[in-house]
Length: 243
Ligand code: PTJ
Image (cartoon, rainbow, N blue to C red; front, side, top):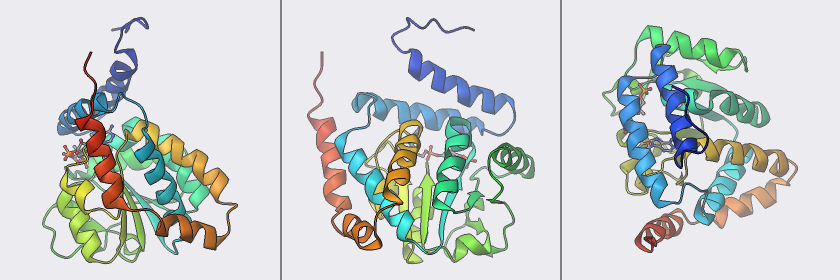
């Protein structure tokens, strides 16, 4: 169906279409459509815009990734359908690998996602030899690189893995529209924004900030307070103005 551009929810409906297409192509999990619905609900409360607290977190996240020795970006079906190309662009700037990590893992889904990402970027990891301690889901299976990474960017993550990654002393950067989720509450840096806006914003910040001195980047990370920033996002919802 062709969505009329005049439709008040045009942008949101177009984003849905990307997930439906990914599902038809066999790499978005059916549950991923439900996850998007949950995200949309929160996005509505943020006026579907990147708010100040999200910009702050995105800058801190880019700074943390740029000063890391072994950064990595972990992606699932939804993330690839929504912004796979942009993820590769960000990884290229950060010079880091992209790892495919699925909650509803199947070899077939992993393969399709790998092929999509490899259209844009070579450094895509799918070979899993290690396990994250304390985690029973398929998401525990990771590459050696991921296992030893110091900073991991995890869009649309599950709460239990975030906790395990923090326990492994990794810096965990989450992108999650729900500021109350276990992921948001446990991550080192939480970006409360839609992944479709967060990743392009991060690309722009990374282009600019890669020229910064290490000390300046460290200062940005040091001055970022995740708890305070999460509070700002929750207060934004509390003060939401109804029509
Ligand atoms: O591809 P797989 O097999 O790894 O499965 C991926 C999903 C997303 C299905 C799986 O991880 C899952 O069930 O996720 P959740 O727990 O339903 O959703 C994770 C979080 O992402 C929730 O807190 C949502 O609010 C949030 N979210 C959903 N869509 C977006 C989002 N956050 C940012 N941008 C979005 N577009």
